[in-house]
Length: 527
Image (tube, rainbow, N blue to C red):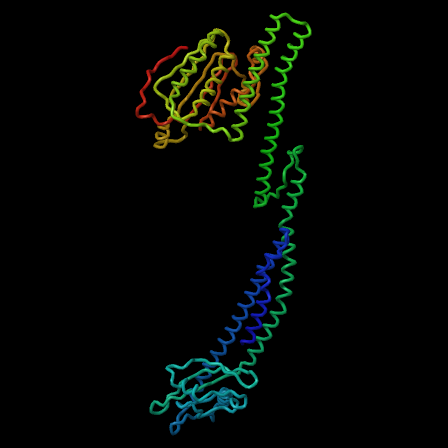
């Protein structure tokens, strides 16, 4: 038994190289998957083989032990004591039963309390199965003795005994041992063990081949995605990685890459559009400045004409400065480098100051500008960015409102939108927000232009641009308005009707009212 266990241990120990695999593991993913599959399969195979081997042993010995106990019970029925010595009655009327009894007692013995055999079968001595008297004496004295013991003989043959206590006259104890040779079982164990040891290496090799094929099939979608990805460049971002439609991890990976490529394509398109728009915006004023300057130099214009040219160039330079400043703001916002510095402030007070600041500009165009403010509307905002947003909205309204028109700037508290019902709807209505509305009676915006009004460098329809060509901006004011509103956790929306005017509404989170805040007087503040 121990020899076979040592052989099995040597077989398992021969796989010790598996634990040192990180030192020389394959560099390719396919090789690593194949190797890991082979290692795991081999370990499971050896574990299953060992479990099967020990299960087989347990079943064989369980059957032997049951048979020995049955034989001991049978022999015990035909033992009597004559003058204090046990006697086996083998001359029975039933010859078959007598034959079985003699067969059972071929490898058996009965010993007394001194450990000396009083009856033993010749086969014990022939095969060298002997016990020390001291050992047998200890077995007789035990209460109870071990049920089963296994001893070896001269030719490494083992015998398994079942121990049974016999009680003689006067309480005299005797130990009856009935055994069976284990050579057939040992031969079966050896055969099974060597068959397993020969089959295991072949199975490991086959598992490595199967693992390589499975790894290749598993990684084929990855290989296809790699080849497709190598063909994607900045010039053909419309290409996508292939998917199999199985909605597994590989399809999720391909979908994530396709979504990333779509975002890159959108970014490249915006960058190209942005570059084209910037180049156009810079080229137009520069060409105008260059043309006027060259004309003045060629014609040797008088001082008054030269002054006019310089004033015109100064206006163009101021426009370029505003555009570059706005571009810098948007670029920093896109890069995440510009974050608003929030501080408590009253939106009403800010709006009144800016309306007062724009009063002269509006009056010069014959436009009436009024601010409608009520109770304090506290917000947490970056005052510089919020001023820029409000100025852009008012400037845009003044620019596209003809003479005789009017502009309203309203600040109020409004309930946030709620689609709930019952108690939840009541609680949602209590969540207030600050609302800033800039409404004008200008030329308005067409319905097809409204979805793009906040895009960078977007131009409204030709009629709107032509009617105010001299006041046309660079298309960056409203994108800045949207960025400032969203950077403060708010939003902006627009409603417009051509020929009737536009209304821009900015919604901002309402901050808690400070305890020491003094309420302002509701009313209309003309500017």
